[in-house]
Image 1 (cartoon, helix red, strand yellow):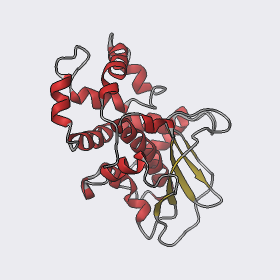
Image 2 (tube, helix red, strand yellow):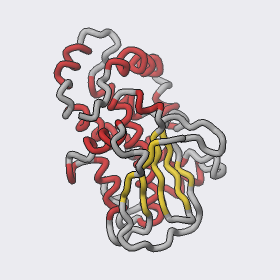
Image 3 (cartoon, one colour):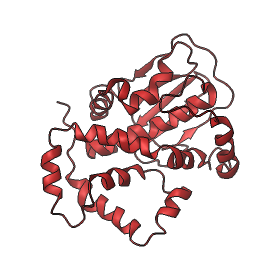
Image 4 (tube, helix red, strand yellow):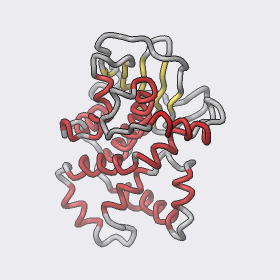
Length: 248
């Protein structure tokens, strides 16, 4: 959910890999990540991570399943942090998150990787352009930091930037992931009679708001009467029926 800058430019490392810790291997998060990557060059997750795999990258990246607390404070679902002593980025998914549907796990992985992507752009903008060229990124993001960063502990600049610039990519990643599920057609039939079902596109949109509810975009969204309750209904009545990962 959060990314904590470590200060200073990372030191160059030759061919830094994207790796997975033993805590990640063979978990539900591992299975979901593999499916998110299955689209090859069209995969949103691969586009977010491709810069880290280049020989010119100066940041390593490792995926973990484990404690997502930060400085003694609970952080639900996931976190993304940077250790300046090792030049390594850590993406964590919490063990509790693995009890939820595979689509919700996918949302958490993508959310944390958007943090990693932004951090990569901050320190290596020329190689982190997997989503789309952003020639004015440095200038634009500086404006977000000026507006939303109070301190390292109170910094909503990345969340606001993601809400404004990247939510459509999040929807695309979730859509591709979910439509590849063999249960997809049956689920569409199942949901069609539910009064809380507002269509599959809205379900993807509702998921993208996870972790972004302190943003100006969210505050604007809930100004429309009924929007906040509509999203709560999705979480209560729709998410509970989404399939869970069985790692097959």
